[in-house]
Length: 348
Ligand code: 13P
Ligand code: SF4
Image (cartoon, rainbow, N blue to C red; front, side, top):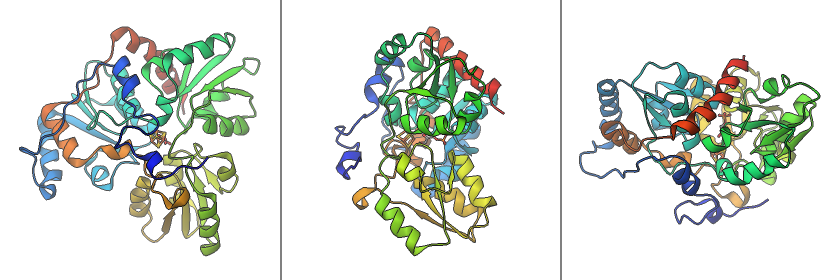
């Protein structure tokens, strides 16, 4: 599937899935816009964020797809599994979640008594948007005997309808623990689902969702980069389309890809995931070279438009005003908690 640069812009609010609709209906968070007033100059922001963090007894969790400047002020940088584990164990009073809505919502599900802020409340996810709770309920009703595994990239209302949550780090391991005779329904990422099915030898009934970032990589650009850098290893996130995964030397979650760049003997890597992660790759293996594979038509669609809504300014604002917050209906939270806790207990 091919997209133009316009397709992946959220600025007009007309691209696929602004992420706003389902979140407004499922959680009752308060949105607030940073005003220029009072925001320290850019060079003073890291120190100002550090001071506010202390004052609030806050922890800053950041996903690898955040801007380097955000990663540099974070207490923990990780993939979805690392960050939910950290959210489950933190003793901070405030969690400033620099990632996307489903990640901050998961932190809130695990910590109802803590304040969870997301610097930009519109930081959604095309996968979560691709799976509205009511449609998912109808799909489940068509497969009443199936065990339901949902990728963590979904709303609390979809989690609440699932038997087990997984991330790309633990999906294969978790799937192998489901009794062989039990059919499995997997949502919402069909590309991850196909890869997990292949790795585990299980048949899965797939919800037809996908990530607008990972389905945009250009095969032509990858082949050209391979010719230019024959020594490079191709590493890919399993949300990529199958024909690109077929060209990869190594497939894994963001943290596994990062690990691979440190443990592999290859001197360079062609990276098929959001290029935000290159910051940590470069920091941890400065002697190696990393080449992000571009999107089709040279567009910058390989940058996650949702992740990139968070900025240092918005992070400062969210710590100062403790807004925008994630709030959840308690009954929904309790139902969504069950499959998340099951995942944490079943993961290695
Ligand atoms: P990871 O859990 O591998 O970090 O993936 C999260 C994500 O949103 C990938 O697009
Ligand atoms: Fe969602 Fe894709 Fe962005 Fe990950 S990269 S947060 S799956 S839209």
